[in-house]
Length: 83
Image (cartoon, rainbow, N blue to C red):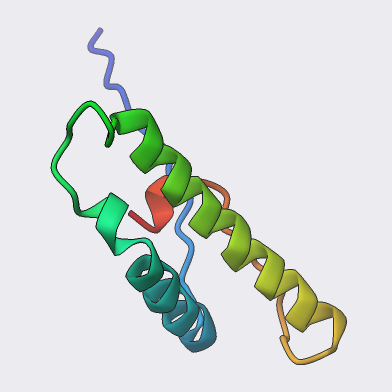
């Protein structure tokens, strides 16, 4: 008997508005996100910046959904979706 490991992933498509906001948020944090690792720019700091971006995107999506401007409220479950 042969066991095969499979991984399940969640596929999340970003809306056009989310893509524009994502680009803006990355641009604002580009100094940290694209800086080489150093004593000041650690892996943890970069992870925190990506998490901030995910939170901002989800917040904007929720607000748009509450105003009735978004058909579906689809949150980004994990920072790996946007990195």
